[in-house]
Length: 141
Image 1: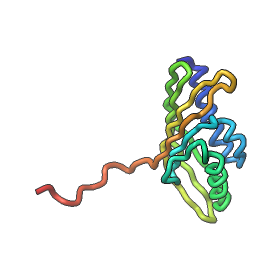
Image 2: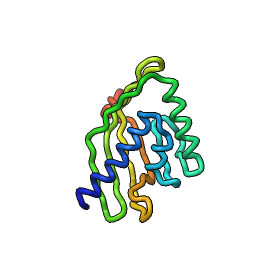
Image 3: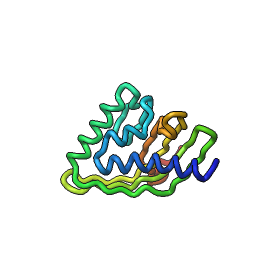
Image 4: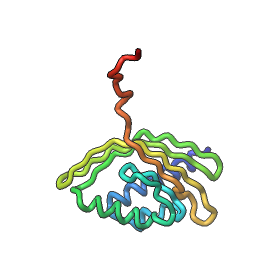
């Protein structure tokens, strides 16, 4: 893994969230391979190639119904193996009123380097950051 590859992969991922923040769906899609799949923190089903543009449009619609969005992306852990990479990070986000919402999610992005397009995201997996092991309320007999 070269530092340049690691930096390039993290830049692609950061660009996706920056484009979302700046309400630029086409810029966001430009960072994602057309066959990209997504496990979104707000969606119960896997978003596949067939639905990626509809998913992005719906995500923008829900975002527009909320207030101003801010987020902090941090704790990046990136590994690159030839033309494949995994970028893991945390996202703490906040929507202001109306329809305020806050969250802390962990995200894994899988990227692939394509000869013509460079690094593109091929899969995104989001999930809430756990608060720890739930308490055990019943004793074992």
